[in-house]
Image 1: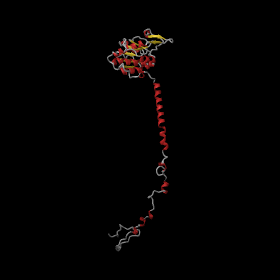
Image 2: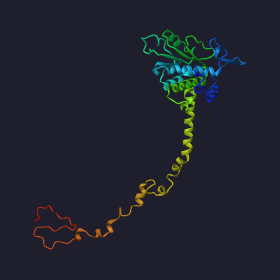
Image 3: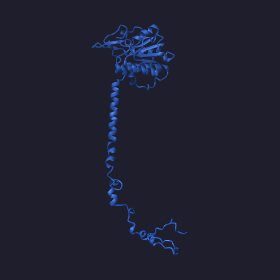
Length: 314
């Protein structure tokens, strides 16, 4: 407990958070063991929990948790979906052992089971929902800390923190405050500076709503990409094929074999008959000056001599 110290007293910011999350709103029914934590009852039948007594019991529970030498010996349990995320975050920051979801019977009593544990301290979100681990803890003398509503049974509960354990924001805020006070008592964080971990990380989020938010973000991203690159992406496709490259028949036009016949390329396919090379024929070549010998035939007019003949003399 605070012991009247100003350092451990509740701050105005914490009070605002507790009121905004509705941690002071209890149930319509009230257990006789929780009457000492009730401030008054509203006209609609809802019991109002005293905030100062809630804070005192929160500090008392934080001191008990910080007194455990090994943080892994502290077991945080929540079978209710609203507290599973808070339990995992609490275990991550304080080093405790989390059990989120269904609790396997015999975890604390049956040594044959694979999930057998021997914790030194147990923290539960709701004594009514988590009645199985609370009952088993009583068999093996494990002290129990529980977030208790006005109608919660406190049997086998050693330290009860009165709060609204049925609200989504209330459960997340109480686990966040408990983790912060444990770290402050251990000296991990300072009381002069605020904790850099946000409360939103401890609050339960509906998977369907989270999926809808992700889909909406993807649609917005696609719309932004389309609006940003739509006009620029369409411009090259519209301008492609309309410049001077496509108007040149030799580059951008279609191939037609008739064009090759009617419009031959310069220097290819010309008629060499009228050229000077055509005027020079083998008959106009220089004739041999020597008279051929007897029996040797003269070359023909076409200039095709019998180089391999048998009558030719070399």
